[in-house]
Length: 253
Image (cartoon, rainbow, N blue to C red; front, top):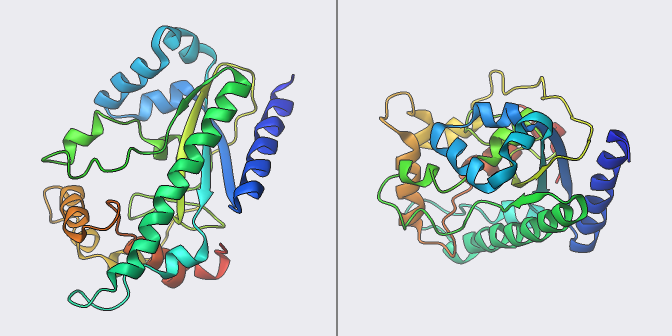
């Protein structure tokens, strides 16, 4: 098959799986060497382990397919109702459970695509790690950043909250990746950006003061553990991006 045909083959799988699950989707394809070159050193090591004996082939001919499923609207609406002392945690857990559902859907879909292409699936971010580490930097070596592949493949741009912002779904998406050496058409990075928007900063004090904190991601990790939802999530910046950002009018879950 040609590069274009292989791209359409992946799109067809995603379309079918998304329809079956009632989920909207997005995808892109980035060069493997570009993704590898952008990762942190510890993540390069992890990606090399995942690629195993095919790393040289991957560096020469490989691609990283980035796939995304969007949250259903009801999940985003469930985030952070009330105030700090009166959060409706039962409702917030609707979002936490949607997070787990999307991870499961991404893992199954990425495995299906990898089988179809003879590639290697990299599952969605492992759940429950925030409470298993004593500092967020210990987390980096245990995963490969799906956001790098999503950004380089045009799934979206890197938002001010460091999440990927998709032109249709905002940052209300979850990501997984597939490594492949088949010929497949690459998709360019997005030229969009957040511009003057500060909605996520207004929703999260850690983001708003990240320039003053030693590592705001560590503060975020601790807050996720503190919330003690059904999974280690928050989502306040995601909801703000979708509902209150300068781009809210173009987002549509």
